[in-house]
Length: 204
Image 1 (cartoon, helix red, strand yellow):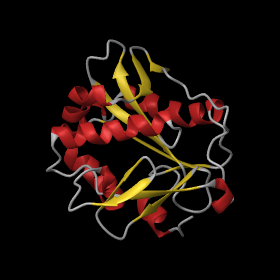
Image 2: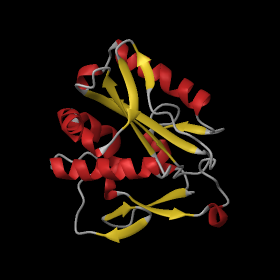
Image 3: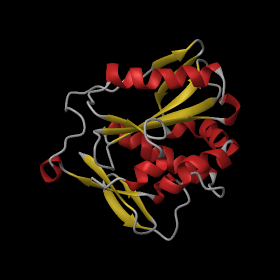
């Protein structure tokens, strides 16, 4: 399956269905409409692909798929870094809004968890090995813009910017994508292409 985002109103996505809402102050402001490979001519992941479940990043830190049960750690991580994260992701995703509530974040994580299970998109959270705190996330999504077969981006909390942990994550992600994922043209948003440049590309 491939995901195509719709930007024409306050919509949310869930399980491949698009539904209108009055307002949605989370990343789900951007709606997705699931299109079959037969319709688009583009495949997302092989049917037998098994996604990684734990990825070492550096001493004491790892990535794993996020779940709704991680809200207690995700919410303070996101909202504690909200102004900087909004400056990065706000224009493209409308996320994370300053008004986002705990329940809205939990709903968003439940959506991510369902999409991971269905292999529709992936959100990996960065944890310390004891999983006492969440320090960032890595998103692996089907392409919304032409010229790539996956779109990948990531962030760390304010307290980890400029640290060895951020440097380790920055180094790891492209190597991990090359080694463990079946993409041939991954695009690293905000890295090999600016967000403004990405927004200017034609949609898939």
